[in-house]
Image (cartoon, rainbow over all chains, first blue to last red; front, side, top):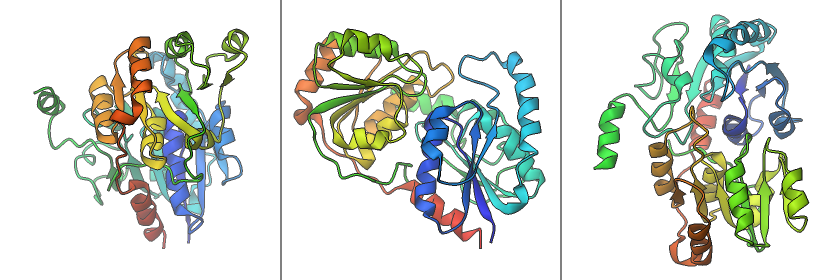
Length: 172
Length: 168
């Protein structure tokens, strides 16, 4: 039996990963991918499982253009993760997930995406624009589209209604 | 599936303090507003906003940057005041605490105001667009009138069960 890799991307994303870890409750091996230079995430998860540091290319104030070298570095660091020890990778809606998630998919892992619980009318940009999520987010539950896409997606927001329609509903 | 919130690791108690949580990046305007209330029962988490400058002004308060065991503080709080973030969900659903969410406009890439407003409604929290001292004092005073715990099945348990089942 192989384990699960939870991508704890800092702040609330780490909280989500920790929460799922709590309920896995040692039934299977669970380890974490964490952002480099994030002592808060490190302290929160230290001792729970193996921690694989991978650069988070885009911090809240980082212009996208400056993040490109970061994404390249993140892909290089993700190559060092022993994906063969895992069956599933779970990301929690941050740009930090993109590199390790795609590398994991190339190694044949099952992909799962859990959107932020606070995203009710708008998806996060990472979830909305990344190739691995595209076309899958509208159908919660198992789905298989392309090798780079997630097989499982969960979250309060779905694309079954347009954002503008939902926004209209709320304001009326 | 249900919302994701942490499993309870402490029994909730009301230890007499108000917990102010500003997340990883901090929310100086909220901290400043809370200090201006003059309340002496505040516990403040500042994140990457240096806590020393606040400690120098209010040495009587408990002020720290980060605690990996923030659940302990949440479990003991009478009320939790925070920005739009996970703490709001864990405080309201895991520990059934009254919560005030104060929108942090610096989070331009985070969830929208509408997302936050809707979430606040779902978890029974108060929602503020900006820190407002007078309004905060009123809501702190009248917390017993407006607070009613909201309960949902935990989506994290369902997700964990699926992850375990597909690993065999």
